[in-house]
Structures are given as C-alpha cells and as structure tokens.
Image 1 (tube, rainbow, N blue to C red):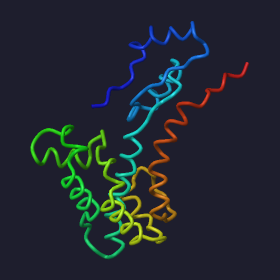
Image 2: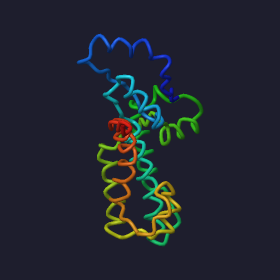
Image 3: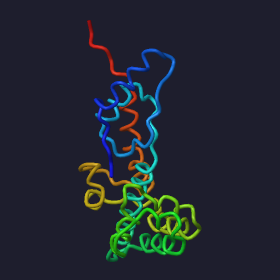
Image 4: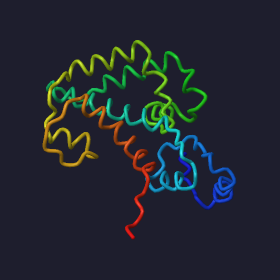
Length: 193
C-alpha cells in the first residue's frame, strides 16, 4: 500500500529544523508519491528523497510493453516471452518474493509481476533474466516503433508522431519518474516584486 505524505502529520517534526538550519531530513520510501506530495516533503525540510521500486517498476512496465511490441513487429500475437522467463526465474528462486506476497497462487502471480513493491527487481540481474532482456532488445534492435503501436503500449507519452526505438522508450519510462523528483526538488522562483 502507498501511504501518501500528509504535511499536517509532519508539522512538528519539520519545525525542529528551525533549531538546526544546517540539517535536512531524508524521506525514505517516497515511491509513488504525487508530485504535490513530493514538493510538500521538500518544502518541509525532507530534501533527500529516497526512491527505489518506482524506478524499477517503470523499467519492468516498459520491458513488458516492449515484449508485446516485439511480437507485433515480428508479425506475431503477443506471447509474453519476457514475463514467462521472469516467472520461471522467480519460481526457481522464491527467496526475494515468497514472504512478501500472500494469497492464492493467482494472487501471488499478479504480485510477482505487478506489485508496487516490485520484488521482481531482484531477479533482473540473474543470467536467465538478462538473457531474456538481451533477446528482447536484440529482436527490436534499432527498429523504429510506429506511432500507432507506440500509442497502444505507451499512451503516457501522448500522441507522439515520431517513431521511437526500444532504448528511447526504456530511458523515457525511467526518466518520467526521475523528472517527477527533479521537479519536486527544484527551487520555486520567488514572485517578482
């Protein structure tokens, strides 16, 4: 579950910084906060915003989308090759997810692939996972993905009319999260006098 920052609950803690102007707070686990919530954290002295699963979640989302795109670009029905490879890796070595995901086998399957805690992130360095990602990226290569397919799989980029490569889409997906943090930490210009 995501607990969104509530400035009222941090008011007294934030006030202690008045006695220590050389210090700032670190906010742990700021993943999935709203842009306004991140700005509020910074405004209240939480100048170090720790992020983790949100970045790898964005990467996993993009990789799974690209897996579907690769099949379409190869004139095939999307088959979920990458997801199958990741599922095999997670089932073969359940230590990074088993104690975190409860419920039925189906519930656990959903959580393994789509949970916001993104326990799948611990499996990307495994040889079977890196091999599956390498195969996916090789299949796509430098081919430009046409705009209609881009919009189907990456609607968050809007009606981009220029085709894009897999590498551009992967970087863009992670960059969108990072931009949220950059915007939250940029100084707000003072109104002109």
